[in-house]
Length: 111
Image 1 (cartoon, rainbow, N blue to C red):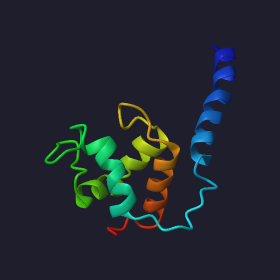
Image 2 (image 1 turned 90 degrees about the vertical axis):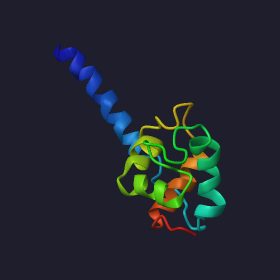
Image 3 (image 1 turned 120 degrees about the vertical axis):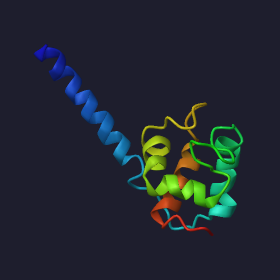
């Protein structure tokens, strides 16, 4: 049992460290717009699938207010950016995740 722990511990630590560092050197010098960049990502991957459509119990991503509620409670960072479990059809592209990360870090404005 001790040998398994000693083998698995470095793997787990490396995985956690890599996830946290994925966005470490991200260049967010160009402003990201909710209307022009984030909303189209949501429309193509989240709200059109029926998962986060209008009046969804999982969160309505067809509106800024619905999406920002999940940003504020850290669900977006956890599920979309870190664990990449959303959308269920597969992780968003790195470019899309970077846009979302920059937008969140800039204050998740309705712009």
